[in-house]
Length: 253
Image (tube, rainbow, N blue to C red):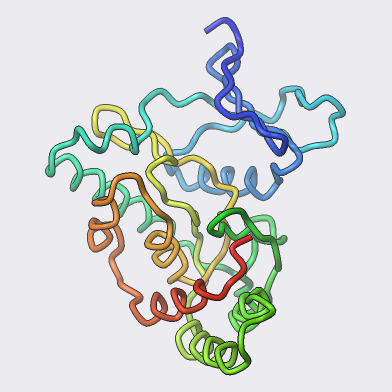
């Protein structure tokens, strides 16, 4: 490829393929925590694009974060899924389970809920994202979510949600988490996962977080979430119940 191909271009960020089998992501909403998560994932030998830290920032004023990485050859899983056989789909689900097993074995050494660099997290919500933290423990993480409820939420509802979070969102291990395991973030080739993309929501989260987020995010392929039992070695049904109650009253922005 001899010229730039634009994958995404918004007022907030840009993703472009450049000559030399490179991809650059830059803009005011691109954060260092994504680079840090990608670097950590790479250190675990997970399938992720290789980072390049010695290339110039294409941002006009140079003030915004820029992430250069290898272009990964393959297809977006979301596009390939409808043409796959049941056996191929199960194989992909098992590959993802193996990847998650490596990630979930990585336990936080601080116990904090935070980005890979120790800073604030970005929470992917229904229409946008919301940043906060780092949080010293799971109770502080819970309170952050209670504080994000609509202001007009009745007090009894607010108290019930807070009680549910305290009951079910407590005493979890804090593990390395991607935070957005949607099919659009998985590159495949010849039915093998080549890369997990978009690590901006990654960090150190309670162990149930990947599971509840996976079931919350909509997919164009309705049977994707049917493979949850294969992808996740453990269910968190109580945590899922509390999370769904939270979402009904949580500001989606």
